[in-house]
Length: 375
Image (cartoon, rainbow, N blue to C red):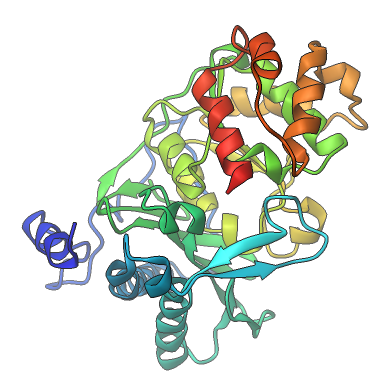
């Protein structure tokens, strides 16, 4: 699909999120009426009018990121300028992650706009680091969350834009430029998808739940992986490979109920907080601690997002359990063998390895794990 086709489609579908006549955000003034639908609490000293102004600016940032990303969509490796970013002390998944010219161009464009409009604000970006982290207002940017999806032509990535007030996420944008979908979360108000209010629609017990995680390789061996295994056994079906898009699915009530992840950067989750909370969902770290700038080191990038408080409470019973041993979470010895083999660089799937699993997990998800490991 060509860039021209994408842009024409956006125009034809009315890609206008802000009314130019009065600067209003469609759906952005809708208050929460459903008692079950809670949003992020607006800090008492945060000016609501200033919050609305910053929300409109967040849309401008998302528009700017789109213009930088779209020309690189489904282009060659050479055109993308792929490089590998190596980080120490991270999970298997995060220790060597791809970065492209699109990632960098999109973040540069957003940072330039922030510096021009709000030079006193802080910026915390994945590609170009942190400035003025102690400012009252800090913008947290992930230009392409899901770069592995982006470079393989899968439209399950997103641009994440958060605005923190004194460390607390009060504005969140998840923007999917290929599918022309944009989620907005604003403290004290109902979250929206393309200007229309959204609400979670999850089940209330873990054994009915559809759960997402980007990949099993994001969990460190030992306690983290054991707890994820326990969650995988507790839910109806585990799914993999959607990055930030999985959280948007939960917030929108599209059939996903839970997301469990670990080893995330601040830029990977801050934008998700207001979106989930404003749609009636619950999001925290694995111990139920609020996700903020100040708590990032405590939370260690471990995130739990659920469609409702009941699911969240049940999941926390597993994830917050201290020192979960493998015997507590694994009742099938073939699982331990498969984990060890997937984690080795010489893993070659065999009928003997996969056969014990066919009855316990969807074959497609097994193969997706293998493909993720191989990539």
